[in-house]
Image (cartoon, rainbow, N blue to C red; front, side, top):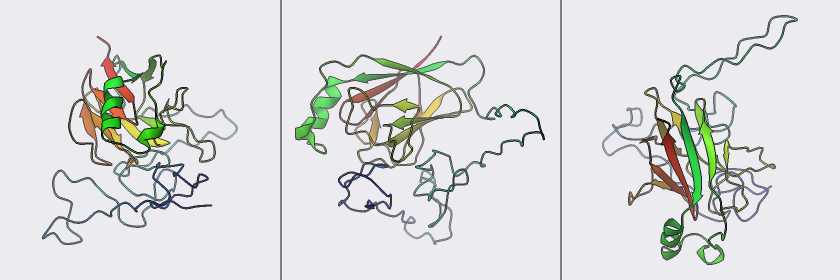
Length: 240
């Protein structure tokens, strides 16, 4: 099975099933300590937390390339899930409620839309395979209630066993979205943050000129817009 520059096995020999990179593209650059810092020194303020080389996810055992696991989305800076054992001969226990879940009564919705202005910007910048991507003639808004601790965003891949919570497989399907592209992470104050899982094409928020740094949570507020792929816009709304 072919292996992409980031080290993922892929059934597709053109673009990686997991991160969406071109199979013959350049490998992702390793994290480099800040100038003057020793190898064992802590990362500087504002730098993303990067696990040591060879580290594996405490939740599922997959190799880690950044703070958030590309296979299951677990945050490597938090403790792994520890489900309670079932009593002998008794029913399975109910899953534990995450300690940092959204406060009761807080309701958020993510609305997925096709944004023509963003598409035009991507085409003007001659993004990946821009000439072969067309804006969908019909794409009704899709609404996803946000519940729990983390919400994965991407496109389903049966061969890789990837089933994101916000599945952008379509139709219509945005080919610029990686199979596991990003995470929405619940914050203790009742808001959300978005994390780019080192996707091939990245993502941006609102009209900010630069894409987000991979594996670095970016806080979101009511009405913020997350742009990814060739034309996908995700708007977060908080219920009054």
